[in-house]
Structure formats: structure tokens, C-alpha cells
Image (cartoon, rainbow, N blue to C red; front, side):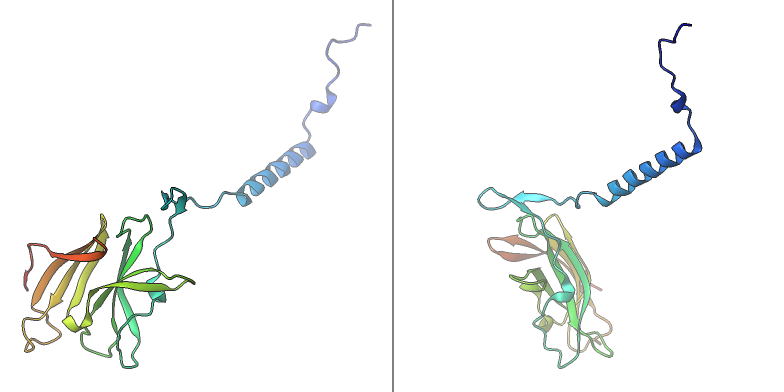
Length: 190
């Protein structure tokens, strides 16, 4: 009798228990891969000195202490926008805030926030609109390193606070260590 050149591979016939073991092993590999994912990607920039610095998320406007006198009323963050305003690779937050009044239209203030020196609290580093100007902010945005806003105001004290009659389109850009304000040419009365 002549023996075959290939040994008998009787164990290569797949049985249901083999398929079940293979499926279980594959499920374990997929589950392990799902648990061992790398962390989220972050943008980096070069820090002073040439070492890479990791970009931080924008400061949270809800954590800042605003320099508003609200007479015991809470401070409300009405709008916010974020972006890198000073070119350091980390975003700042621009917050539109006002005292939460029971009725009427309280004036807005606009502040630029950055991360605090320690802890999670944001800190105010610049004031773009003082509440004493008696203006409200219709919209605000951060684009290409500039803050743009539409400010609503009043031509005289006789204008009811419900109905601003002036509209001003402005922008601020970081130059020489401070925010420089410029008006866009389409400012007009409403």
C-alpha cells in the first residue's frame, strides 16, 4: 500500500464548535481594539523656545468672574464665540454678558477670556464693550483672528430701551499688545 504524500488532514473539517471558537476570538480582538484607541488628536504649535505646545480648548465662559455690578442679580452669558485672537495657537473666548433683569433690555458688556493661571476658571483679559455704553449686541463672531459684532444703541435718552434706533458694525483685532477697534463702513441708524 502506498501512503499519500500529504498527511491526513481530518481535523481540517470545520465543525460548529470550531466556528464558534473562531467567532469568539474575533469578537475579543474587536472589543480589545475598541478599548485601546489612541487619544483624540490635538493641533500643536511651537511654543517660545521651539518646543511643541498642545493647543487647549477655548475657555468656558460660564466659569469666569465678570466685573459687572448687578446689585445681587445673576450674570447671564448671552452669546459666546471662540478663536485664536493673538496668534499663540490657543483659542480665546469672547463673551457677551449682562445682568439678568426681570424685564427690560439690560446693556451688554463684551469681554475676552483666556485660561486662568491655575484651575479651570477662565479669566477676563480685555473689555471690548463696557456696559456703561448702554448698547446691546445683536451678533458676535470670531473670524480670521478678529472679533466682529453688530451693536445696537440709542441716539438719545428719550428712545425707549426696548427699541434701539442705532446700529453699528465693529471689529477688534489684536495689534501691539491690545485690541484695536475699527468700524465697518455700513454703520447706520435703524
